[in-house]
Image (cartoon, rainbow, N blue to C red):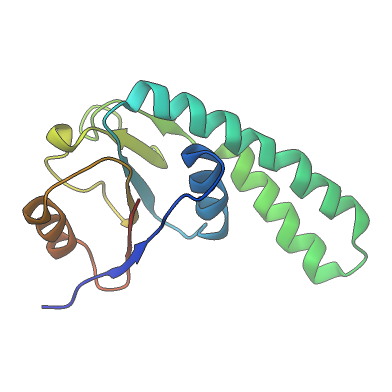
Length: 144
């Protein structure tokens, strides 16, 4: 059985939501994202705030570049930043979102087309390994 790529991230300075938003921006691939948090309502607000701070930076870079390929790439990135839909609702009740934030107890199954999972709260090794077993081999499992 193949496992997803596992990344262990440590926060040395700065906020978890800032690090997660920047990491998520670099990981913008087709598919959904799951964030496992012990406080989903707080986390969705913090991630949304940090996520929206990325848009002016992308637009600044877009306005200062002259290379056509880079302009197209940044234009698509800006569009993805604007259109990302986040929710704390259960996956079954809110299909079609791009980013789901749930507690470990609420996660009964991965979202459809899920390629990235962030674990931002303590979970035991059994939970972690079960989650890794359910993920596709080309996915990323990030543990803070």
